[in-house]
Image (cartoon, rainbow, N blue to C red):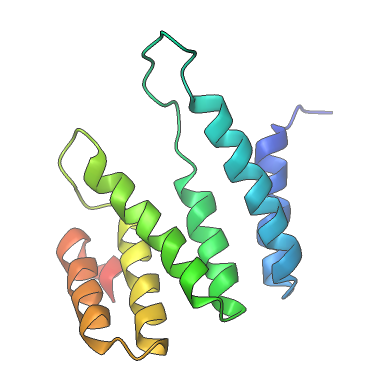
Length: 136
């Protein structure tokens, strides 16, 4: 039997639960993943190590599950975290599907909250940072 990474297994289960409409259970899996992945990337005291991997995909998925439950603030927080992670990176912000998705999803949250100006800004940023096929 092939070895499967427990983080990948948990991510897949979260996606499956969300696809079945079991958003609360999916959020639990994403919470576990985000907490554990963030623990793995913290450097030891006195050491300066770059993060191995930020849980951006997991935050995006958790935000989508929160959005399905109309937990607008939690969803916007996750999408904003993804966007801010790209802005903080040392390299220039470039076309990336996660970044474009975060802008598009946050625009939907803002639209649902009646924040139409912010929604329009995020839709414009989705077009700005992604190729045309990702921004639509």
